[in-house]
Image 1 (cartoon, rainbow, N blue to C red):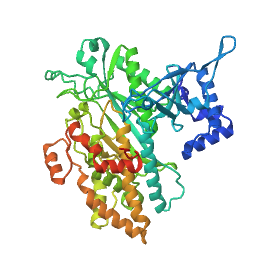
Image 2 (image 1 turned 120 degrees about the vertical axis):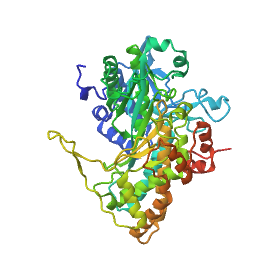
Image 3 (image 1 turned 90 degrees about the vertical axis):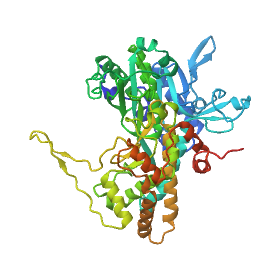
Image 4 (image 1 turned 180 degrees about the vertical axis):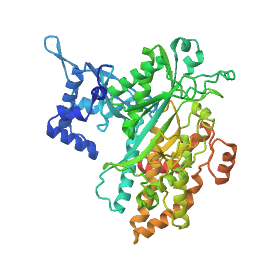
Length: 556
């Protein structure tokens, strides 16, 4: 690679730097106000943005544009139109209007519409999402959009996600104001999704009908003893795979994807790519691009990329770890405990809101990751169980127990871990610990939701996470806003809610049979299959939750 990474990164993205350079100052400020405050984009403003976007894209070699959206199929969709417009004399010019930028009308008859495929129901609409940057892929300007039906019903993965983020923002702001925080103007959820995948030789792929027809392995046998390749995780990356990873990184960097970490995974031919976290909306777009690029780049290298979950017993499947947190526009992570978590009342309230949400809606979290392939993976010894529980670690568990019992807690100081050799540095010991067997684990300043399947969109699980935590915060705000003595009411609320929802906290071995029995005693759900889980979506409890903020009530 001759180009330096900082120069390469985002080179195919119409990002903030490009907008600042190419847009008039007043237009740039107006666009930012639209993005920051969630206002509607005026057509005259859109026309200026569209012209600048087209000029930039054409200079980069683009000939077409498309409204890039994410229907409920779980993959992305595109319909390409060229920039050409006829001129007298048999000539053409390159044009792109604000109307074309803001709105598209793709055929929706191929997608679920909730009704019969009559003519008027077959029409769909795409609407530009100005909070996500446009980018160039395959000589086409891709404009991230939401997708809805003729009647205005959401038909995509983006619209519910944006609504859920908006819902959490609203309720989190209510809570922050109660703590006297007047500086924060917006609260966002952030995600860093780790993506696992398999790479196999294209020639071997073509010999396997199960791979061709289903995208995953359907049969196999345990390897002979001594040939299990269990050292694959820490083994040297194969040169051919390394060349693929280098190519993949460069393609993703061009598109502004924060690809950070790459390594082998546990199973033979299994690998992982992990990005730096960003806002949930952008992270979802980036993860869709990552999965697409993984497959495209693999073809260049004579390989096939498989995003399937667990194939059969004895072989690890692929999943995603959804590292989720809540951050303010001032740069504060609301799930950061600080040096003295027991004294950090704001953190404790947000932590308790998450615990309550996961306990109240554990079944929804399970169904958000349900699929036939993932069912086979969940509960195996390299993936979390189907039972939803929260791992907090010893320190945080003790903090919450002290609040519940009304006892003083002395925050633990960081201790140094001695490795034994004089030349090696002493490493601060992590008081939060880790638990690889937990489906929902607190990892210091975020929660790692580890149950997602490899091929799935991360939108669904994050819609659920955002919505259920927003509901908890809403209930807390309703109660605390009426309180005459805020501090006393806060203490009583924390104590009550921790006691009510502590059953969901489990720091032990999630792989053991003992946990299944213990979870049953605690009254936790064990929805082992998609068939068991799907009815949760249409339960009154779920419908009431989602129609409150994310989805419109049924018209039937």
